[in-house]
Length: 211
Image 1 (cartoon, helix red, strand yellow):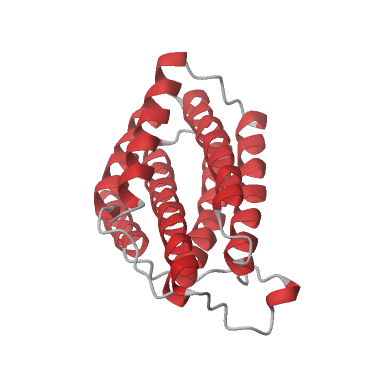
Image 2 (image 1 turned 30 degrees about the vertical axis):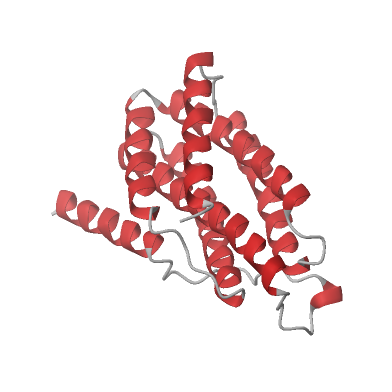
């Protein structure tokens, strides 16, 4: 029964992630200057924001896939706690991005299932390599995501205050997750693996920006 329950849990998590049906536990960040507005923007501005937020949404889909794969094979309770805590906050990010995309009249990426599956497989492989490597993947992932979000703060329209507030809070959370991975034994990944992760990220961001 344990195996069946685990399998059902994994499938449920995948479906909830891909279709963004899990509500956020935290209130979506809203800048005070924009608190009373609808968040609507001019069409050309909204179009750019939608694309960038769609990329961010798929990044959170990948994060969920990675963490669920790692949790499936994690050995120690403390490591599971770190992964579960990060995954919970990443679910907030996922819901915030989906909500903001809908506000802007856009849609999430049709490629989400593919990227979730790939990230899940990577999570399983990193977890099987051992908890220190699993934590190392968490650290490297969060560092790359934090840099990616910082670049999006430069690219998002300056008057899209709502999207910018979301991305800034996401960036802060990613830094905390990465530090937690380091504190729980994460080891630096070999350079080829880091480069492979960066290349995969470029494929994801380049494709989901448009679809």
